[in-house]
Image (cartoon, rainbow, N blue to C red; front, side, top):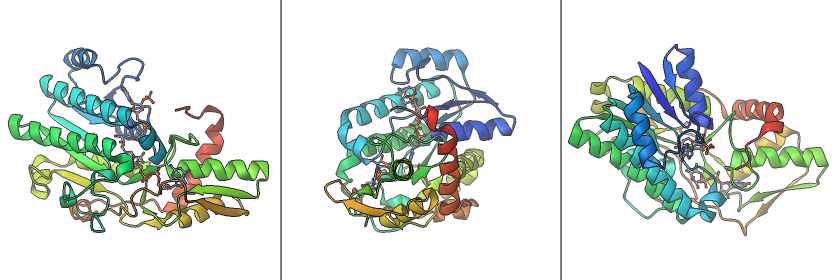
Length: 318
Ligand SMILES: NC(=O)C1=CN([C@@H]2O[C@H](COP(=O)(O)OP(=O)(O)OC[C@H]3O[C@@H](n4cnc5c(N)ncnc54)[C@H](OP(=O)(O)O)[C@@H]3O)[C@@H](O)[C@H]2O)C=CC1
Ligand SMILES: C[C@H]1O[C@H](OP(=O)(O)OP(=O)(O)OC[C@H]2O[C@@H](n3cnc4c(=O)[nH]c(N)nc43)[C@H](O)[C@@H]2O)[C@@H](O)[C@@H](O)C1=O
C-alpha cells in the first residue's frame, strides 16, 4: 500500500502524512516546486510513473476571508485545475481510492444550522468565498461522477475551519485563529494597549484541530466501501468533519487573549467583512459511522500557540 499525499507540506497534508507514517504506511510526496498540480502534463506523467494505490488530495489554494476576497481568480482557477488534474489522472493511472478535502464553505450562506450534507446546492453561497466554494463543489462532483461512470472509490470530506501546528500565520492572508494568535502575541511583545479584530465579532465559527482532522480523514479512508456507501448517496457522497460546537469571533478573541497573556482592549473593525454569519457543521453522519473529535478548543489553541512560539522564526510567507 503506497499513499500519495498531495499538499504534504501544508497544515493538513502534513498532519495526515505524520499519521500515515506513524502507522508504517509507505507514502509518496512531491513539493509544489517539484510538481505543480495545476500542470496537466506534469501530473499525467507523475501519476503514470508512480501509480500510487491511494491518493489524499490535501493540496489547494487556501486562505482566509481576505485572501479569498482579494484573489478570487487564483482561488477558483488553481483549485479547479488541481482537482481536475489529480482526480482525472488518478483514475487514468488506475488509482482505486482517493480522498478529496473540501470545505464547509460549500454550503449556502444562510443554510439551516447545523448544516447537514444535504444542504449542498440548496441556496446562494457567501460572496467572499464563492469562487473557492464553487471549486470545492466541483471537487465533490468530480469524485461522484468518476465513481458513477467508472466505478472508482473516491470519497470527500468537508472540514470545518481548521487550525493547529503548521498553520499559515500570515497577518492578512491567513484564517482567523492563526491571525489572532500572531496579532495578540505581537501586541503583548510590543506592549500595545489594543488589538484590532476584523468584523463585528458576532459571526460564529466552529474550529477543529488539524490532528483531529487527520484522524477523521484516515477513518473515512479506512472504511470499507460497503460502509461508506451505506452512509452516503452516489450524488450526495461527502461527509462533514467538525466538532459540532461553535463560538463567536468575540469569544474566540477573548480565548486567544487569555492564552497569549494579552490584557488590553479588543476593538472590532466593522469595516472588515464578517463573511457567513454562522456555519456550524451537522456531524451526525460521521458520528454515526463511529468518529468524533477529541481535542478541546482551549487546549488546541494553547498547543498551537506553543508551536507558534517554537517556530516563529520560520513562518510561511504566503
Ligand atoms: N485550513 C483550513 O481552515 C481549512 C482547510 N480546508 C482544506 O484542507 C486542505 C488543506 O488545507 P491546509 O493544509 O490548511 O492548506 P495549506 O495552505 O496549509 O496547504 C496546502 C498545500 O497545498 C500545496 N499546493 C498549493 N497549490 C499547489 C500546486 N499548484 N501544486 C502543488 N502543491 C500545491 C501548498 O504548497 P505551497 O505552500 O508550496 O504552495 C501547500 O503545501 C485544502 O483542500 C483546504 O481547502 C478545508 C477547510 C478548512
Ligand atoms: C475555512 C474557511 O475560511 C474562510 O472563511 P471564514 O470562515 O470566513 O474564515 P476566516 O478564518 O478568514 O474568518 C472568520 C471570521 O473571523 C473574522 N476575523 C477577525 N479577525 C480576523 C483576522 O485577523 N483574520 C481573518 N482571516 N479573519 C478575522 C472574519 O472577519 C470572519 O468573520 C473562507 O474564505 C474559506 O476559505 C473557508 O473555507
